[in-house]
Length: 359
Image (tube, rainbow, N blue to C red; front, side):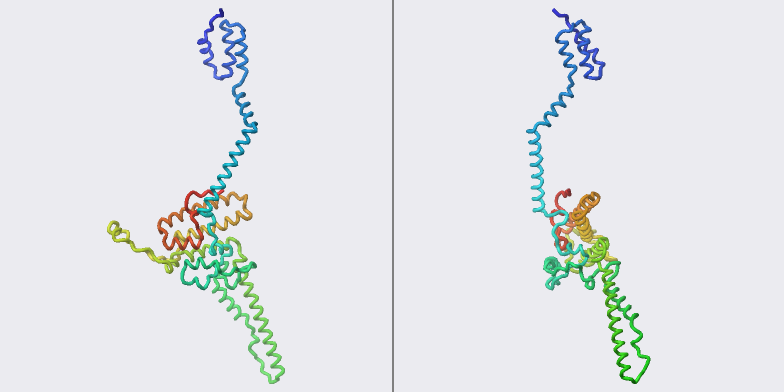
């Protein structure tokens, strides 16, 4: 009968060892030290001690990753997830619209050239019908807009200032030879002088027309940079959506109810008259953000694909516009200002509803 092994004392001796592998490797030593001979059970202990648990698990993981059936299942799950994401994105875009661009309206299309769209004859009475009928206006030539008909000019100039400068330059360049200081009775000499005067006048007018056309092309926005067009687009948004202009066209809010006045007398506060143009209302800020979003989105779509900084800027602008749209929708409750803004800028529900994620 083999001797009994005091297992409890052996475990107590192994308690001070921190490494598991070292504990397992020393189990046969303690057993032999207590009087156990090198039996087959001791050899099994040594074999078990020489095998690493981490190594066995690593081998199993490698076998699992090399299994073609498991790899095929992983690829199928990934393809199913990607296809489902595409379907959900298409459903969202169909139901809510594009959260970045929305609907391409004539006013938004004019941000590319910073030239207001030409309104039709039937659109002078109503603001909402003007937005719908502007799509039927004739398209501009691909060579660029006419510099004579532009309402906004570059370098902070106006059309009136350019006309005044043109008239003044024409007066200064008038020929002194128009006054005939020499009197003569010779009809041939008079005829020769009249022909010279007419020829010089035609040359002067031709040079003045050339100089005026050159000046108009220099200050034209079609030859300006994107920063110049963005600056003019911001001014256009202020003129189109500022309350100093829309208060004259759109109906005002209904008066406060008497029941609300009784509960809250301070609700009937009189509004202070504006000292200048409206540049900070929600409508103006939303329109300015839409102009900036279109500029950045066009850049990223054409030549700025690896530009990660502008991708982040686009995300910030879109979410900032979403917050302003939610605020304006809550305050106006679908009123005329809200409808005018949405129809003019072509904003859909995807620009303010739900969570917007740009990839």
